[in-house]
Amino acid sequence: MQDMLKSVDPWFLNLSVLLLSGYFLWSIRNIFTGFKEAVEKLANLIDRLYEKHDDHETRISNLEGRCGIASANACGGRRFYDPNERPHQ
Image 1 (cartoon, helix red, strand yellow):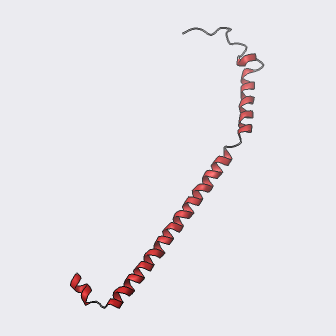
Image 2 (cartoon, rainbow, N blue to C red; image 1 turned 180 degrees about the vertical axis):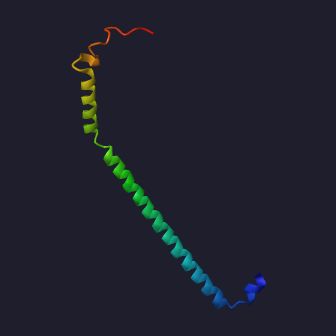
Image 3 (cartoon, one colour; image 1 turned 120 degrees about the vertical axis):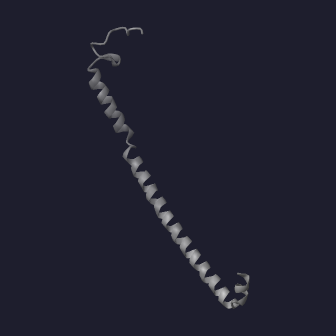
């Protein structure tokens, strides 16, 4: 291998190293560009996910409404047919 490199002209080796280095840098740049786009898409997806579930006031209002319907005018969260004392187990 070393004998073969000694027989090749130095200008050819320099040119080939320059071209291969340029190709390597170009391909790495494209890889990082694709990675950057994928991360941006993931960030947008996470933002949309949190926007969908970030309406806490509406969720609490819905839960309060469900509890109010389930308790049906009973105070303290008890229904009219619940026993006064809970049985001991």
